[in-house]
Image (cartoon, rainbow, N blue to C red; front, side):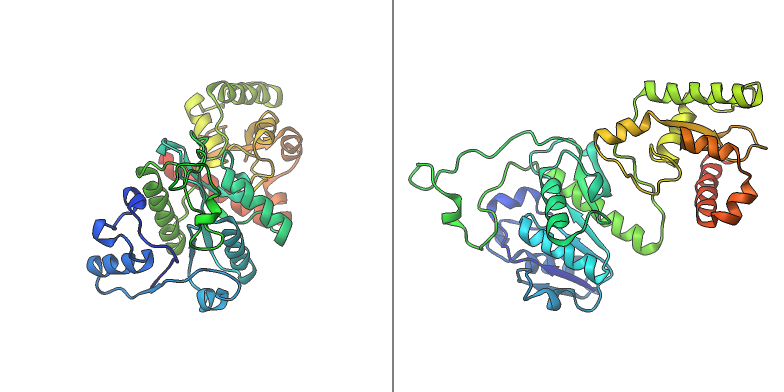
Length: 339
């Protein structure tokens, strides 16, 4: 069952980014428009369309029944923050879309925790309000773009041509009157990313998302050189280093997301993540096996020293969750490389 909820109507300006609306649908509530077309595509599905604004009075009606997933595509900050906070407090799975306006590069769209999202004014405002008003600092996945918005709103001019207050033309309290330019393909890709995320989450398929901070080739070269020097210092030779620069990139980026294996999620964001990268090195997980793609973990310098002083049996006994998580990640490398 699908629930579509919106208090807005299809407008001419939204046709460039509305997947199913046509000129004939202008003036139709968006929720009902989606229901009509979903019913044509998949008549066996059950769709409930509600022309309703989310607020404290409608929360129970909207969120009761424990939905499998809530997709937040709201662009009004007050309503967005209230909905996300309600989902967190109710223990509901939620995925939030941030600003797609004034972006043009589809390759920079990412999924990450809200606290990791950068370059997006809406994300920044949502983070601030959730922390200030509800004490929520993270734990909410968001779809956002790393690309900085390319344009800003121009001064608002009403019918007279003179600059006026946009709020005087507001049809729904708290909602926008105007928007920054939107390239229709970008919100469409946001929607496809959201759909893929929900389907894979509900099916139990583990999809590893890209790290928000990407290292450049010099960083990977440094990690490779540190590994060689560490091997020579510990074992007297680097003969068992069986990874090249491309494989170092795979291990650091794809397996460990540019952060220590001991961090399940990024503790630093923005420039803090860049600084933390400079404290990382690759070391063997199992000292009895060579330094190959399925036997390397990324650790901070102090963590690496501690790791070298312990046995795998010790870690398995004292840190079973960490042991299980690392072995699962390294198993993925074996499958990816057919080892």
